[in-house]
Amino acid sequence: MNLSSGKQWPVGVSAAIIVIVIACAVTVYIALLQPVQENGDMMRDYHSLDANINELIANKISFDKKYRLSYIGEGVSQEGSRLAYRIEDSEGHAVNNGEIKLVLTRPANLNSNIDLDTARVEDGNYYFDDAKVPFAGRWNILAKVCVEDECRHMNLQSDTLQKNVFEYGLDKPMRNAKANGGRSL
Image 1 (cartoon, one colour):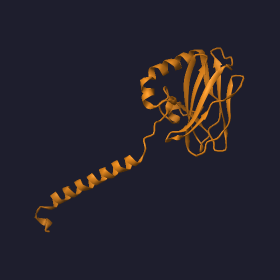
Image 2 (cartoon, rainbow, N blue to C red):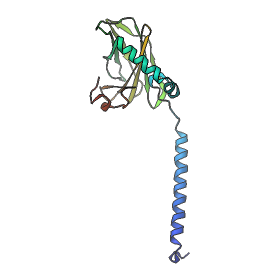
Image 3 (tube, helix red, strand yellow):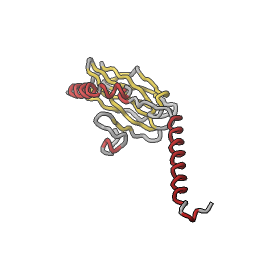
Image 4 (tube, rainbow, N blue to C red):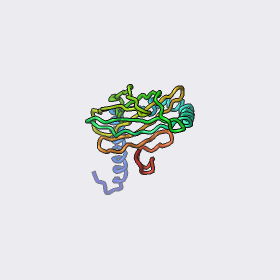
């Protein structure tokens, strides 16, 4: 075939189109091999979180008017770590009648969730002792805290390779140190 007679452009364009179609097909095939994972933030799936976000924000505001919640624990570890929260009322007195439901989850795979329900309570501090994670990497520490009829969520990000724990959530949308002004908890 003689391409010098002006046929090189149609052949080149046709070859480019074929390569692009093959690349698109490979991309779709690889995407279909990867399962879709729900994020699980606020202990809800995406649709439930989206439908009830206003209620969750109102609950957080109501809780924060009466109580102060702070994370005082360590980052997650494969050897075991102490996860701990402190609840105080608006006057700074320790609150010992709260309930904390805690879930450790990997953002990439919700099949490795670890539920922690029973906390040891001492003077407003809620301790989850010897919390071990089976895999190295990033873990989310999702907590639902209820005192009487007031509830709120606290989402934390931790990594087995770093000691810092960062909060993210409704008012901290970024999942990195910049969301906290470069500070860790």
